[in-house]
Length: 197
Image 1 (cartoon, one colour):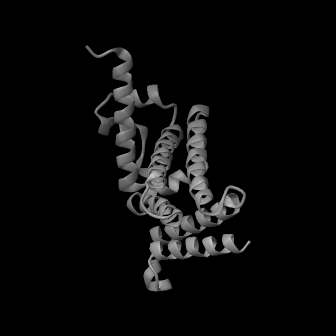
Image 2 (image 1 turned 90 degrees about the horizontal axis):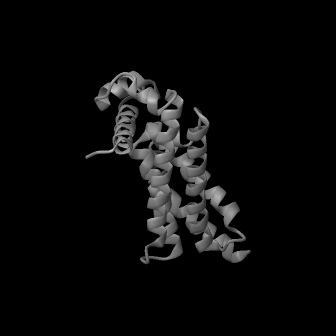
Image 3 (image 1 turned 90 degrees about the vertical axis):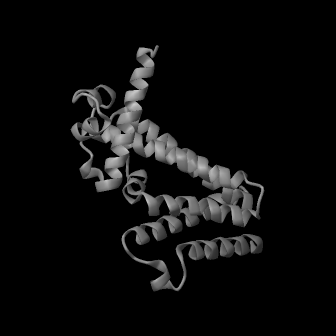
């Protein structure tokens, strides 16, 4: 027999999945609590019992996506194959892949979270975990003392490349290199710079 808590958790999950699908299909404007409930197959009032408003729902979706990003980047970093530079490039590739495959979600992940306090705290915490994972990957390459500066450079660059690509600016045609090649070039430059300091 399913408990009330299990049923509530299943409904919440269905609402989050429905909202993520709507977000992928049409961006944040396509996500309404009414449409989320309809797609999830629940009553009109069900979404409001789990999320006080649309912003809280979207921030919760962003938090989950950021936690997945951190986990995937961490798995790449923990992999034993390749050098620290190769693993860092792979971790940044996870970030770029998220932007390519889910551009609306990607933008939401890097937007200022809004909604109720719990949703904001969840999104802020997830962002911090993702940043910490990338910082650790950079530290593996350049050491902990130099990692913050180089992590900032790499993350903002990878984010910029990903955003430009998502906005229809094909990096390969314009820059003579794929997005991955641009990031690999940055990683190599940072590795050299860190050795020279």
